[in-house]
Length: 462
Image 1 (tube, rainbow, N blue to C red):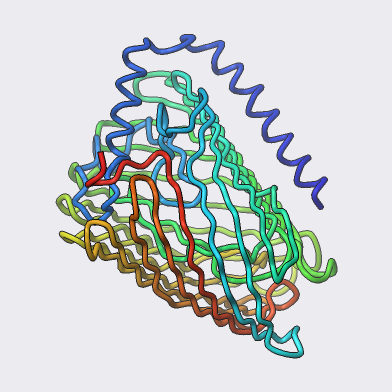
Image 2 (cartoon, helix red, strand yellow):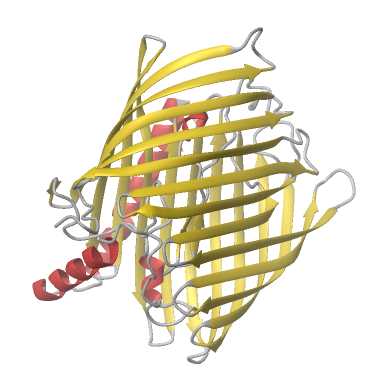
């Protein structure tokens, strides 16, 4: 399995390098140095505040987005864009240390696969490294997270967790642009997700939920797409996006589904109602081929999206549609699908909400559907202390396993010095009917740790 992961990564990197070479040959060698410095300085300023609850500036441009949005890379463990330029005290050219931490965790596990309750003591050393190189209208970024774990005295290394993104943009005419993108992600352990609180970035409207189901084995995903964008007018836009998506997940038995391959395409029309409001109509077709047991499935979805930025303090988006799933056996399955995202900032707190109903919401590979409810409340208790309360619920339906799960728990972060943070987390999880990949059971998890973030200059520390 590890060989398959490396082959997939090598192919992704090879294609990225080849295509980026073509892109660079058709673009100016580099932007002027002073403009690069200005971009780096502006990016550092936008990422500097540590108090996420403080009101954010209004988004640049409008809520419909611009071509520059196509080159945006998201952080590996967060919702905010990955910063570029000079962003870390430990940086050598495009390579820098984003964070490093150590934490001690204790957990109890009650599972259908265990005869008795399992008690574990886990010490984890973790670091996040970034390679980020941008030129003109292209960008290549790799985020890598090696780990050293000591579980009940047994030393283990986990050096295969990474994400890689390559993007380039061609401005063919003032109205027509073409974006090429490849996103690759690999996690060698599905049970490694500690940060569960829903994260949201107001300026981009992005919400990111870490998966909270626990299971054995790895999870790999790779998506390549071509976004053809045409501006009919300053208010109206058409996007045509063919894509290919690959998932792979190992479980307890090779007999069960372990991969899926999905060629497809998205067609969308977006209209800017005002600088802060937009409406969109979309159609998506996706032909998914599964590794074992499950039949080939054709998904067709029609939906409507409405999004709005309300002042400087909150933003929401909602999508509603219908998906038809067709297989060679049996009648087609038809179900409603949709997404609702909300980010609301107050003077010293923030609320994020998400509802997601659709196909394959989560790590488990299935040809059914699932829905996710998720919420997080973040409050700045003092200039140095932040409290987060989070909870979520996940369930599958029209699927063979009908897996469900929930989690809830608080976390507390205290800034002890410039770039240094003390963190404590407690989480309760309960998951049921997991099939081969996810056992039924309960988890109580608590941890205390210290984190160093060399690229952060929080308020109150100069």
